[in-house]
Image (tube, rainbow, N blue to C red):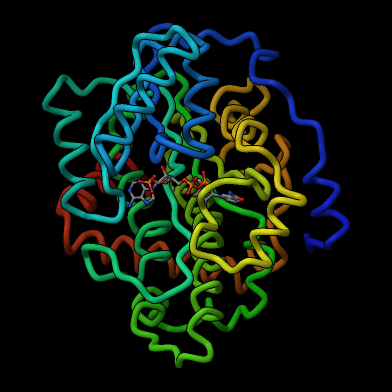
Length: 335
Ligand SMILES: NC(=O)c1ccc[n+]([C@@H]2O[C@H](COP(=O)([O-])OP(=O)(O)OC[C@H]3O[C@@H](n4cnc5c(N)ncnc54)[C@H](OP(=O)(O)O)[C@@H]3O)[C@@H](O)[C@H]2O)c1
């Protein structure tokens, strides 16, 4: 599908179902949301807290901000099963430490994992593992955490993995950027000139969100068909949050004019995580709480080839820094 400005605006002002309308109880269920101290993750956590989860873990990089969010959610919802756990998704060591801690403290099932943490960085910045920040956080870290939490998800009777994507993936208008031989390393190695630095990094954000769509789809293809795991990628819409904090004035004004509130945008995360009509629809891209065709590039032959290449590169890169990743893939996924 192509995204036109008209379709984009129409979606921005669409009425989205309120989470309470699903009449869902999360009693006895374990829910983890990354980047839940603010923005879409925080609002989604509030909605889910109202569904009485057995355990709601806010996986956040800053423990102080996370504790404040826990208190705010408890006060707003009366839910006392909210916890804050430290996670910097852009750090291999932090992802490993989170998963190891989860296993050490009893492990058990994870019913819902919402991979929401993300950045939109206009200048060249690096993660602790020296990846360009948009790619390292939004794709590599997200993929790493998905792999490490897979054994726990697969213990739940009807687990869901939700990965935050974006409708900006429709604007990855230069497929040749995606089709480079060593995609992840080449994006990392690029040294844009001053003139194009901002431009190149905006593209890296868009590319990272395209990677979320591709990765969510191909991961779902590697999950054995006998497994009840539902993987989806979600577009929350253009929302007024802290995500654009480092972006230019004009984009921020446009954001204020047409942006959804984070409460409205967060309904899309909750829909993907609990709505009965999503169960079993694995590998789909959701927008405005409905299964939607992703971009023409994603569904093209070239897009499918990029998806395979992205999978191979990601598995190779993560396998070199975390031996648990290949073990989990060979134990739980089909080839
Ligand atoms: N807002 C939009 O218009 C929009 C549109 C499409 C998709 N999305 C996607 O939605 C997701 C949430 O965005 P948002 O709008 O809610 O942005 P936000 O308000 O900036 O929130 C992002 C969250 O991610 C956390 N985070 C960033 N880097 C992290 C890391 N390395 N480890 C752990 N947590 C990290 C942030 O923590 P700190 O508070 O510590 O920075 C924050 O909690 C992102 O994946 C974004 O790409 C947003």
